[in-house]
Length: 204
Image (cartoon, rainbow, N blue to C red; front, side, top):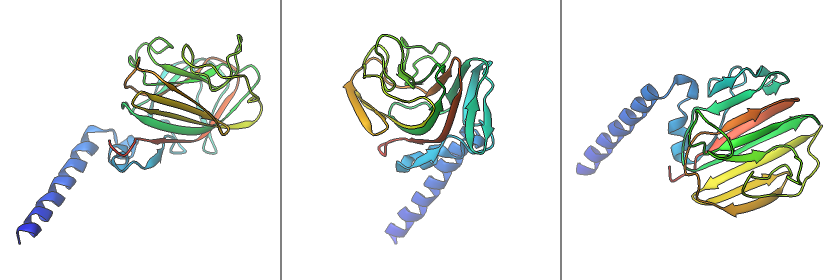
């Protein structure tokens, strides 16, 4: 009987916790705070709007056929999720003149650059910085990424950082930045994104 009482109260507590999270989190985040406690992946695009993100700048983000497309302006999409550890994967297509990157663990969402967050390049840049490099930290060789679909995985668990681009991984250890949202940075050219999924490691 005592066991049943604990089970009953435990169920009430879980429901209360979920309700409080739903009240605290915007409905547009799809109750992701609950889903992530299981360590499951969830989409950051719902196919119709950008409710999981906040916008910075004048970039003309458009959603077409479940793809996020952009060709004009400049700016960032900043995730509403802000955590210490995160795993993110997505497919992307870039033109030859694209200037794009992804920031993670953004310590100051008002000032996002390679001095306040980890910046992963999605395109090759001058000086031998290849797509998949973490600016100011880890440099990989340039590789073919333009005018084709590419798959990237970003993993940040504790001090262990890992970037995997089209099946090739690069790992590094660093302690500069410990937590914060993810930001998609667009500064020109054409960028297409799809299948954006995030996993918060199970211990969260």
